[in-house]
Length: 154
Image 1 (cartoon, rainbow, N blue to C red):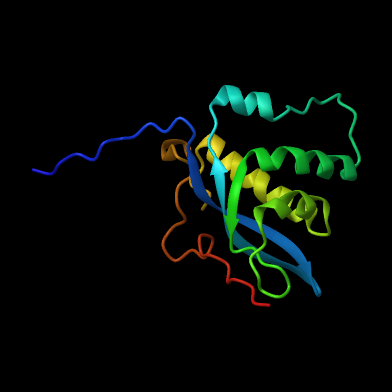
Image 2 (tube, rainbow, N blue to C red):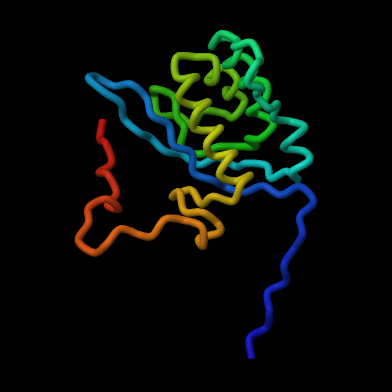
């Protein structure tokens, strides 16, 4: 008989999660991926930390949104791996606020917000719901709709 593995309740859990960013390249976009260590919060903490948008709220300009993301997203991201500078050296996580307001700020904001939402709402990084019973059926055999797109190379 197998010995059960105990389930440990960590009061401040963190998990490594894939983050995908789509950045402009000549004549299009390329998707890149890296891993981020995300803090897992209670729903009460998510609600407190992430302001809800209201339909009648004034739309801030993009600079304000990116500046706010540079304050908020580091609350969720403890570390990252697979992010380098042009010389190939690992970028320290302390660079995250500058990245979020820099040339790729929109791309990183979208990627991190997607990853945080996946973790918060129980959606697997590949898009599969944690609760598969309510999802659409898988594509029929022979269909190409479910095939993964080829990874771009730069």
